[in-house]
Image 1: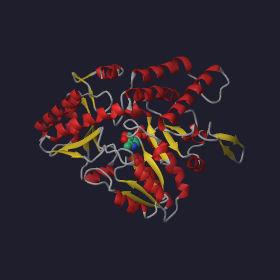
Image 2: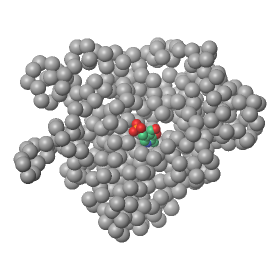
Image 3: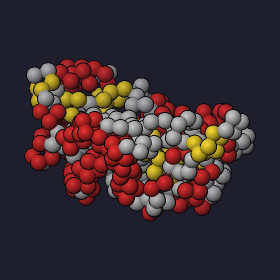
Image 4: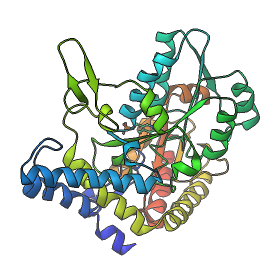
Length: 401
Ligand code: PLP
C-alpha cells in the first residue's frame, strides 16, 4: 500500500486541516505520477500533430498514439486495433453508437435500457427512440440492486434491437452478469452495448469472452487522463454504423459533391484527438495491471465490506444496493438528513464523497429519493480511511438527525 500511495502525490494533501480521504473515485480517480509525467513528457519532447506529418516529431507522436491503441486492444481482449475507437469518454462513445444506430431504428422497433443506467447511457437511447419513433423500454432493478434475469428474459422476448446496460452501476455498485445478459440478448436477436465506465477499473474486461457488440469507457475512471475514452465495437457493427462527426482525419477522398470515408478506426475519429492523453493512457493501464485485478478486487471488496459493516451499524442509515457482486461503491442516506449536508460535514473532515443524483435521476426516482451520498474506492484507499468515513458519518448523524 505504501508503494501504491507513493505514486499519488495528491493524496498527501490536507483539506480543511485534515489529511485528505479521497472517496470520490467513481467520479474520477487520482492519477499516478507515471501518468502526469507522461503528459509532461509528451508536451516537452514529442508534441506534434499525428497521422499527417512526414517529419520526425509527427511520426514519433503518431507511433506513441497508435501504440496506445494497441495497448488498449490487448487490455480489453479485442482482436483488432481497428475495433478501438478513441473518443472523449464514455459519454461520447455511447452517443456515437446511439446516433448512428438511429439509422437502424423505426417505429415499432424497441430499445431496452435499465433504470440503473447513468444519464450517459440513458438519454442518448431515449433520444434515439424519440427521434426514430422506436419504443424506449426500461428494465427495473430489484430492491438489492440486482436485475431479475427472468424479467430481463421477458423484456427480451419483445424483440428489442438494442440492449444497453451498465457493467457496474455508479450508484448501486453491483457488477452485472454481462456475459450472461449478452448471451440472452443475442439469443433474442438484440445488439448489446455495455457502459463500462465503472467496470473497466474494477474487473478484468475481455470483450471476446463477454461477446458484447460495444463496450464504452473513460480513461479518467481508470487512473488515466480526462478527455479520452474508448469505444470498442464488433467490426461488423463499426463497418455498418455511419460516421458520427465529419471533418479532417476521417475522410478518404473529398470531392465537391461527395465524400468517401476513411477505414476503421479513423472513420469515427474526426479532428485532432487528445494525443497527450492517449499517450498517458498507457502508464495508467500499466499501473492497474501492475497492481493486478485479483489484488484490486480483493482489496476493494474488503473496503466495501468494512464500509457496509461500519455504516450499517449507524441508526437510521439506509444503504442502496446490497446484492451479490457489490463492490467499490457504497451509496447511502441518513434518515432525516439531506445528503448534501452530510457531504459538507464530511468535507470539513477532509473526506471527499459525492452527493446528489449521480447522473442517475431515473434511478433516484425508482429508489424514492432525490439523491444520496456515495463513497467509492480505488487501489490507494485504506481500511483506516474507511474507518474515518464511518466516524465522519456518525458525527454527521449526531449533528443532523
Ligand atoms: N456511465 C457511468 C456508469 C458513469 O459512472 C459515468 C461517469 O460517472 C459515465 C457513464 C460518464 O462518463 P464520462 O463523463 O467520463 O463520459
